[in-house]
Image (cartoon, rainbow over all chains, first blue to last red):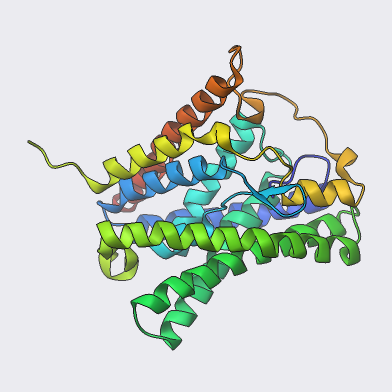
Length: 213
Length: 95
């Protein structure tokens, strides 16, 4: 759901830039404080994997495709602030080099996919793990977090379009949520699949708090 | 022999995923589809400059190879950039 240039008005573009810049600034400080030395290449690989996976659009119903966002995967493995930094790097390079997501809309795209998505995913992941202990529940928690992060990001995207006068909220919100409720199932499935591979090969990554402590 | 690190394997897997990119669905994504259906797709403006538009490395005749190359280079670049940002964010705390 990379917003191209032209969909947002100036004030929406500018205010989302401001919020995102502040969020990324806090994120960098958090990462600097909490990231372990051994987590540096893991963060780099996360960025590499998410970029690659975002290229693989999968078909969903009705001549539409979706692709992984990756915010939930990064949030579960690295925590929400590190995930925000990884996602921001992906979005900035996609916009600058690959013309995927407009330069003027970068603030909004970062807000939706690099800030809101990882925090929503992380909140649901943690809440469900707290409510239901056990390894199996962890995967379900990740699935729910992933699905919710996609739907939340798409809702915010629809609201930004509405505030910009591009489409009314009454039209954009149900349309965006409807289609991303399906794409979110793909996000959840891929997130759980990748997490189970990680769990089988490097279990301690599933406990970022413990690993970095 | 030096033990292969987990992240090194994970990077190889990521590069392999990037090489699969020509198999991706070409259908519009969620936002593009909504914009098309609801009649505001024409509001999208062309980018002010283009480097590697549509994930197709310019100057190559074979589009499959051009997509694979764009994906491969982008994946390597993201590894370098994110590792660099993480490294710098960590080193700044000692200053």
